[in-house]
Image 1: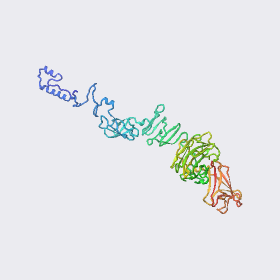
Image 2: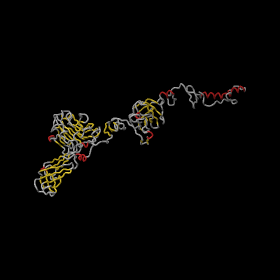
Image 3: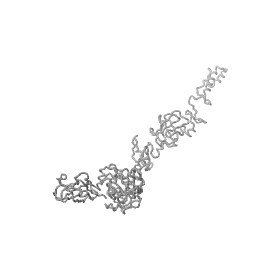
Image 4: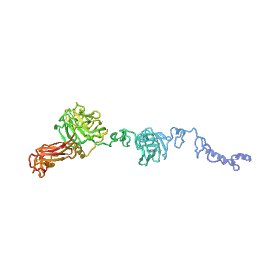
Length: 601
């Protein structure tokens, strides 16, 4: 290598330049040490300063080799070494396969770097999929946090096992500049997702704007259909919770991978078609013993008890505040169930659509009350009689009851429900027939197979709704539930206070008082009237001050021709009153007194 320490002086004090010795010869000078020692030493110094083959002398400046190139150079092994083309093309000067863990990647670059520097790029092959915030430690210089989108921690599955990751040091952290696994598939982590439409164009086109907080789109974003357990729109906290699109014009909502409700052209949720679904309204009473001949009769409001004979079950309202019904079986090898008939006026939104009947249930002992079932039944009768249509003959043990000819199981034949000793939710779904259905009947029943002991079936929160998903029970206020029940049954009671007044009116003669009962809620139809015995009523005029001018009724008649009002006539057998005077009917001093208007189906 040439010397670059300066230029030779080449002078002997008389002659100078490259022809120094030729000049001395021509001038007849002798070769004298005094003429040559200076520039000979200068040459020696230059040789000593030249780059040697062994590399023992270092260059003191840039080496200009013109259009020549270095050849036969070994790969660099240190940060200060030159890298060969082979190194760069084969594996990169700043690449290595990582070791370490999913959240702490360790990279050993060769040649090694000795310090982190802003702008420094590192590429490594991940040895595990990320499970959360992740660091990288290069050549044991210290762990630095990997960031995406310049300031966000790596999330689970952002980095796949075996993926190539490139990151640039910003002076504090390494920012990932390569594509993350979550950027191309289903959303995960906290990346912003943008999808192309079916024509391959960007969904927002030029009208896509992002102000750092909000995204605005002038054109639609297209999302995949998704599934119940893997919805199209989800969040980082629970990838099984979100919304998906199960069918055209339909949106489903899931939590924990279970569909909770769906909606489409109908409302976001439909009303519960069952009245008194939690058995809170109990105008007839709260307890009915099996010996009270309670088969095929209404007990808790709107609910008909159906069994294959009398003396089968005791019926009790589970709680006056939280509701529910308990059926306590008294006879083995029998069947029993509860029925609600839904009035045709309330079926319009259900007929011709999919409906779901759901409820919560438990049994006292598994294996004793077998074959618990539920069914949605289409009833094509306009008759109000329950006995001939809904109360049906029962088949042999373990099968569903036989239905009358104008009743049809909607959907498949009812299947057994595995009811346990703890409350759980059960449901059946059916497409309601449009051809002949007038009313809908909801039926829940069971068999008793144990012959040695009594057992209970408890039911609560019964709901019939539009759609194929059993949503959470729709709790209504007690006042609303009570008012709906009064459309089918109303009762005037005088059970606790002697001479308690019931109805007011006038004397149509000196022996008869006429009173009117304006129903609190217009009834479904003109009701059937019933009452306690005539002797439980007293009649009196307006001058009576309890006991001074009253008489026990000896006869009692009622007249009702509409759904709004009923009239009562009471006689006492004498002529003590004045026609046209104010009169009223009240409770006898000791007896239970009641009047009932019944418009149940």
